[in-house]
Amino acid sequence: MDNKSGSTVGQYLAARLAQVGITDYFAVPGDYNLVLLDEVLENQDLRMISCCNELNAGYAADGYARATGGPAAVFVTYSVGGLSLLNAVAGAYAEDLPLIAISGGPNTNSAAEYELLHHTLGKVDYEYQREIFARVTTEAVIIHHPKEAPEQIDYAIDAALRRRKPVYLEIACNIADAPVSRPNPHRFDTDLPSDREALLAAIDHAAELLNGAAKPCLIAGVKLRAKGAAAAFSAISEATGYGTACMPNAKGLFDEQSPNYMGIYWGPVSSPGCGEIVDSSDLPVFAGPTFTDYTTTGHAALIKPAKSIIVHPGSVHVLGQTYNRVNLTDFLTGLRPKLKANDTSLKAFKRIEEKPAKRDHGDGDAALTTLSLFAQIQDRLTPETAVIAETGDSWFNGMRLDLPSGAAFEIQMQYGSIGWSVGATLGYCLGAQDRRVVALIGDGSFQLTAQEVSTMIRYGLRPLIFLINNGGYTIEVEIHDGPYNTIKNWDYAGLMAVFNASDGNGRGWKAETNGQLAQAMAEAWEHDGPALIEVAIDRDDCSKTLLTWGGHVAKNNGRAARCLP
Image 1 (cartoon, rainbow, N blue to C red):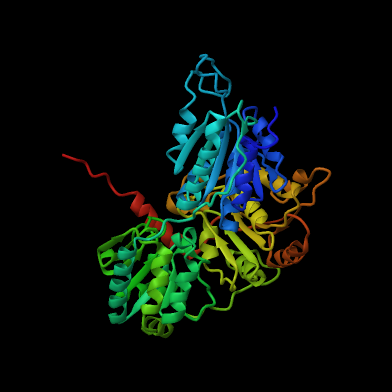
Image 2 (tube, one colour):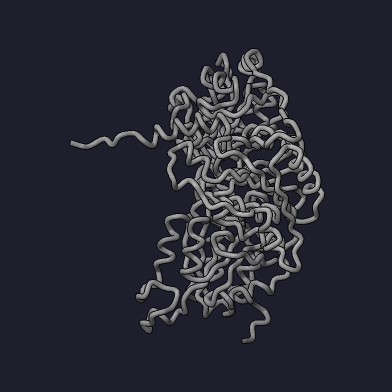
């Protein structure tokens, strides 16, 4: 094949991935994507990260996108690989992450020649993977002809970046090395512009009401990250002096060392004093929120949309009046200079604020508790730390951490797929190599995806994993207990030696007392490789917040069915 002045389908895709800032991509090989991987490997600006399975590769891409703020890419084979990846892509969709899922596909002649193929459902129907992915992506595209590949690839990447959602690209196995045009100049847009009239009207309406309000306050929502609007939100807080809170899935998007910070707004389990101030505000501003059963504690939060300003990624609702095609960042940026300073809500919070008690590290010989564990974790946090909290009690203990300015915090609260954090830790380490990643993972979640720790060892990463061994699914216990919430115990620290084999540099520790934990943490923090500390916690030792939250969520889940007449 002579294509000296052009490219191939696979090389074109690789060039575009590099152009949008991807340096590491995640892959699990299979016969439908092998030629495609060969072509992508030609690009020296990209590095392939080989994962243990497709689900973990997808979780790693999720973590990578969180770390970089840009897109991530994952390559799998057809059907057995793609459908294994599906759950991670669904999570990225729910969490607004621009993940590019790339699958090899059947030979373009197979359907026309009525061939039954391996790895498939056993019938001549090869559109099903695209149809399935269409439900969890913003665009799902099959590339069957090389001439269409450049346009289809650019279109899919554009959609992922503009909508901050995953896309699916399937490339037939017999065209991956087919010649195409070289990649020519193309600007990948990241957002649609606001409708100027709607934007100005929304700003004027909101500013008039806020300047006339007695106790306005600000609440950060998770969508600030997807739209890159966290800085614009912080600028309003700084300029106005409004009391400022974060919803639980937005922890880390506002500086917790700001004098305006009140804590986490989470309905009945809000930070002390924070919930009362938000609920009593005559005009709260929710910027980029998601009002789910998890973020509102079973819909028990006292949120009044008709008496609030709610700013979504593409619309603004001011006391029930809707302004459409208004970009979140444009609105916050335009609103700031029109607002008067008003620190009434902040002063009210300061009057009732409960200063946190000094964290109890406990006696050195005493058994570990969640309180003493997180007291020691708190001491190790720096501006360069990124905390990844797995679904479960780690959410609730993580919420109580006092983040230094600049530190990052990640949870998957919308989708809540247990096991997510292991792969996400791998991806985050690669995407933010200047940060020390601290992962808080329960034993039940870890058992779903544990093997990806070996990939961390393989690529010489340095996460510090706290493996919380309490014998089961604690979060499920507090929502609805049963024998299914108990798991088989593992020697978690011992797994590091298994994953190391003869050439790895991972290390594991066990800690049952406060003193053992302190010693393990001192050694793990300096270790030049993946570090896992298995901490023994009593099964019934969980945060008070989880107990309260679990009760509200269980009540919401357990509502009786309303039978239609």
